[in-house]
Image (cartoon, rainbow, N blue to C red):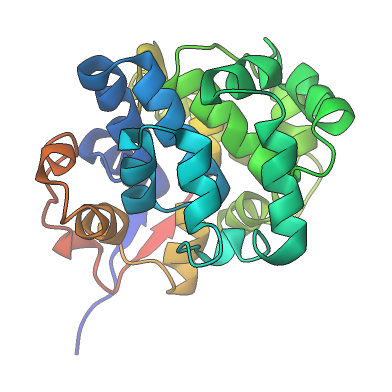
Length: 265
């Protein structure tokens, strides 16, 4: 009979960051920015933002005309569950709305603001019809700040106000209900990784944006829907046709210590 080991959440959080399992696409895009240049990374990031498909993003970034490529593949392009609504006429109209800003670089420049609240307000006012809801506003911040060198500051108040549903569930999975629960949980996770370089942004340390991703992993792990190490393995499999890009991703580790165990606060 196997014994369930209780693992401190802080160990789990730090392991995710130091191994590259936390947000491997951002590590990849930052590497692409260094190896292929800013414009290549901007095109790659925009396709990934629209479809959440790394292989398609690599093809789009290599295409002579980014928007022509996107238009050509749009009907049959691979999409993951988070982008399941980016299809049909509504998705097409969202694509055209983004295209009106110009090149991928111009899209990101038009979207960028220096604070997260400013970014959200800008998206709500100027990117209507682009299918950028609360979840993808957060992802836009991640890409701008961690991958493209366009800093977006996030205060604790902004992090709590705009925190998506899944990381909120991650907090509830470890900390009991009570006043101040969200603040306590988010701060605890952020502090546990505060001395580590942010994945994809080696010029700054981890903070609330990275804590949000850790909390998503905590929720999935406690629920049994997330196997530690699976994200990095999946991303490498996505890029099998692009060995030069796989080299920019960390090498998967042995995560057997997390098999059939549980996390504690």
